[in-house]
Structure formats: structure tokens, C-alpha cells
Image (cartoon, rainbow, N blue to C red; front, top):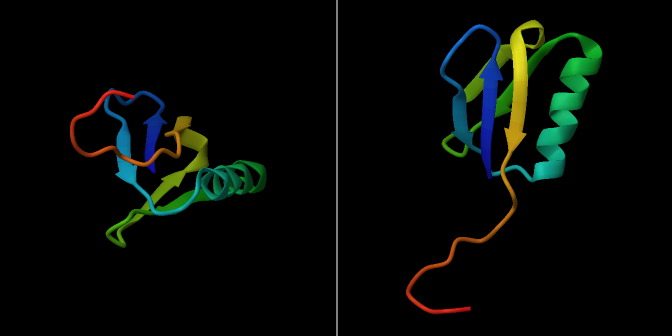
Length: 74
């Protein structure tokens, strides 16, 4: 699952791959915003990303889709 995090007044976004579901990530974002704490997400390699909610611009959660391999028309 690809997650993009936009930070206020910063041109680059944080992009990470997470093994969590879209619903789990949305729940973490909602809890962080509701509680006024930092957003803590762990990527698929075990690295922890911490972003203060006061500077969050947006969080984009990619669609849950399996990657296709090979050639073929569907």
C-alpha cells in the first residue's frame, strides 16, 4: 500500500510503502488528527515515520490492488 504524506510549506512529499490495509492507515490518521498528536506510520521495511499533525497538509492512501505481472490483455 503506497502512502503519500504532504507537509505544509514543503515542496516534497513523504512516500512510503506500508503492509497495513487502507482502513488501518485511515484509522491511524484519524486518531492522530483527533488527538492532536503525531502521526506514526511504519513502512514495509520496518522504518518508523513520525509527522507532527500540526504540519500535515494531506495524506493520500493508495488503492489496495494486487500488482499484475506479465503481458496480457484483460
